Image (cartoon, rainbow, N blue to C red):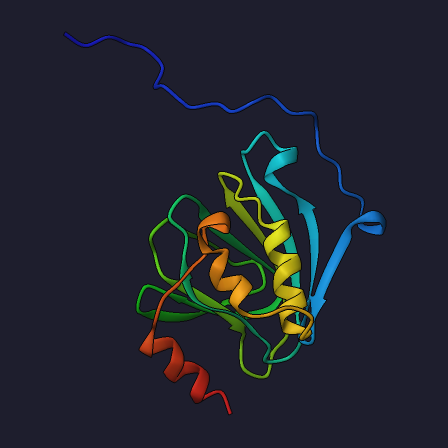
Length: 173
C-alpha cells in the first residue's frame, strides 16, 4: 500500500538569521589566499558552512581530499579555478557552479596564470572555521603540519593521493 506523505527530512536545531557584513567579517590568510569567514555550522543549526576565498595568480588551494559527511559547493565569483573531481580536471570560470558529493576526491587551485575568487558552501555544515584558521597558521609557518593530519576526523577532511592532480600541478610551470 502506498501513501501520499511528505518525505522525511532530518532537521537540526532552529537558528536565527545569519548576516555577515563584509566590513566586519573575520578573515584568515596564507601567503597566497585570503579566506573570508561567512557562516559556520554552529550559527546555522548545522545546515551549512560558507566562506569566500580569493586566490593569488596560480595559487594552489587544496590538495586532493574528500569529505565523508558533507557536499562541497564552489561558485566562482571571478577569475578561474582549476578543479579535480574524481579523476577529471576541469576549469571553472566566473559564474560556474560545482557541487562535489561526499566521498568524491577533489582538489582545487587558481587556474594557471589566473586569480580566483570563490564562494564555498558545505552542506550540512562542517565546522570549518577552526580548520581554516589552522590551515592559515600552518601555511604561515606558525603551526605544525601534523596538526592538520591529526584533525582529519574532526573536520571531515581526508587527504588522498591523486596522481592526476600531482601531474597537473607539476605541469603548471
